[in-house]
Length: 271
Image 1 (cartoon, rainbow, N blue to C red):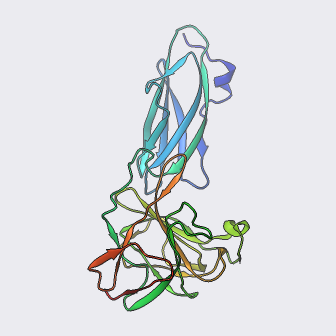
Image 2: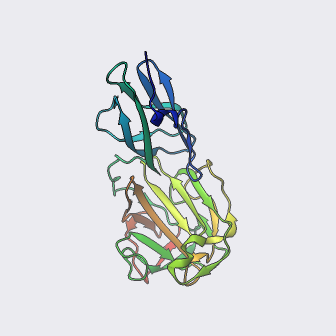
Image 3: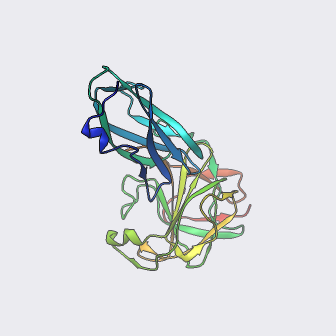
């Protein structure tokens, strides 16, 4: 015989749907407990941290509370909540923290050489480099001095995870960060690239689309936290608690050599 505490009755078939990440978490009743499942419609893994409150139940995964839900997965078993003592009340609830990416993935190899984010026979200078003084403190990000409407090219093969291009406001303070237009692309090694400050309605790609390096993905702009037209670009790994930006190298000139790009230098792409 099973009995349910009020704690569980309040949460029966509890479903969480996230507006920014296409993840659904739910539970189903099974013999002697419940199974927590997740559906992930994203084109990349999603990591979820659970804070369980259990009464007369235990998780089949023990103390593990961070789980990685594979991309494009339906009814992925997260954990089973197993009854400890029969004929006693039991129940549970939980809170979650989630993010795109694989929380447990180690930093990707720094040997991968990225293409420059603009077309052949174009050259642009770097306004702000890695660990820049204005807005890149402790951040490996680059700002390219690009006029509004310049073509932005993918620096690596990947799949589009996020597209925002409906903002048309900007200002030189962090208060305008919420008005950033940007694209996020997921790479095969688990890293991501973010291309920010693209122009209003300037994206040429859509979420879920697979792209190749060199594809035009957007047109540069001056939206969000910005002191003038430019492209903000960063490659990063993501875990539950933080984003780790990576000091990656780019192929310059004819593409035979790769370097860390430096502030105030101008770089040509001839490949």
